[in-house]
Structure formats: structure tokens, C-alpha cells
Length: 226
Image (cartoon, rainbow, N blue to C red; front, side, top):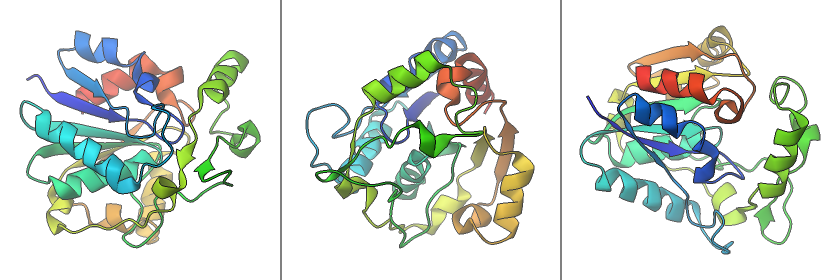
């Protein structure tokens, strides 16, 4: 069955982050739709989290049928917010290298700001398992193309409204952490949204935090299998 797969990259990235993933998804018979959201390279820094949620919801509404939403890193929360808004249309949510923030938490208030935006903070913040599989060329390319994220996105407070989101099946793709680790975090009460999902599956991938850059074919195969 052909499925529309909406792909949402994490902080500092736009839809081009999935360029090496989409050919394999298409070859496997799916319709990948990489999303570039408001203030992701359009010259504007004024977008809010609501603007970006609205863009994802619009993509869900434009799909031919039910969709699979894929969120990476901070955008795991964005994918989950869209599932909250359209629980009857979203068939599955795949979370890569992250999990949804809790209701009442900031979306992604992680790093320092300059002139109302959060620029990429440099690779020192990601030393270790996050970036161990990135070669120097990929690091340079990422840093030079990184799109600063508006404060109106990162500091916005996350709000959920529909309990039916917990009926949507979730697959967690585990790159720099293992399935065993995230299960421990859930059991410890650290990830309350995931703890309430009725069906959660865990899939391991041997990569750092950005498998779409370092393991694109394998990641596409995992998404197709999901």
C-alpha cells in the first residue's frame, strides 16, 4: 500500500535534510513529503511554533489518505502536536532520535540566542555519540547551511488537547541511544507522553543523531518497514 510519509527534520534543518532518504522511499513505493516550514530558509525569523504546527497540519490535510508522520530530534514534538490535532488522519508517528515534550514545557529552549534566534551552537555541544559518525565534510556542510531557529518557535509552550493521540501507534528509531535506554527513561517517568501511548515499538539504528545524513538508505528502509 502506498503511504504518504511526511518528513520533519529537527533544529537548523529544512526539507533538504531528507534528500538522500527520499529516493529509497520512492523506490519502495511510498510518497515521501519532506517539509520545509515557516522561517526555514525563507528569510523570515518571525515564525512561531503555531505557524509551524499549522504548516504540518496543512500537509496532513492535503495528503491523499492517512499519513505517517516522521519527526526528527526536536521535531518529534512537532510531529506529535500534529497527531494531537489530527488523530483520525495520522496512521502512525515515527520519532527519530527524540520524543515529545510534555504539555506545558518549552518546545526546544536548549541553546543561546542571538537577535531573537537560536543559531547552531557548534559541534562542541554534540561531541560523543551524537556526532561520532559525521565526517569533517558533513560537519562543515551542516554548520554552513544551518538555519537559525526563531525564539517564537523554540520558547513556545507545548499544549496538547486530544487524548486520542495516545491511540496513534508510535515507532521510536533509536540512533545515539538504545531501545533499552529509552525504555528505562519511560519506566522512570521521564517521558510521560510516550508512557501513555498504547502501542510503542522501538527500532535500533547504528548511527549518531542525524541518520538521514549518515545512514539514509537504512533509515529509509526502516521507515518503509514501519
